[in-house]
Image (cartoon, rainbow, N blue to C red):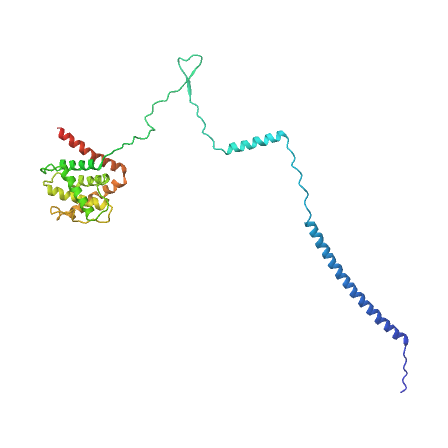
Length: 288
């Protein structure tokens, strides 16, 4: 067509060489990358191995303790003994007795000061022991009522005790109580109520028995072991109409003393001693 074409063999060869060179470079790069990966892996392994070896190192045996000189050993022993002495409880410090020279002493001799008598005594008060049996206290109670109700003719102490024992036996037989009520403490309680309730104006034995059994009912209700007691053993014809009135009057007047007798040992001892003295006063009156 009239166009001139020219082909240069040199340029073709150069392009072929360039392609070969680029291929070689790629191979070299890949080999370098592989070598660097291997180098990094081997370095990590080396570091880990060295760490394990350092951990497995055995510490050398400790050197034996150096012996202290004898002076230091003695000093430490004295310090330890001093500390133990400080921890122990301290004994009371003895107080020296003051001394003064005597007037007739020779060569400056000293004599101890004599203890001056003091009005305050450090000795505890003497404990008074009062003993009495139940039978003795019952006789004392009977003597007290006989002496208080002197207007009642042919009244004996045994009759009053019999009223008390009959009621207690009746309650035991009928099953109202499992244990007898008559004890020294309960007799003292009955005496406390009778002392305030029964006056010298009583003129008959029935009136005395009614007032006495009213005091017994309150004593059983307050000091007895059972929750409640029947009225029939305590109530008679003489006190049937005034039984509750008399009971309320005794409770109103003697409630504080009934509580005090159980709470205050000194008050109980006073009442106990007063009851025991009734026997002695009765014997004194008979002697006269």
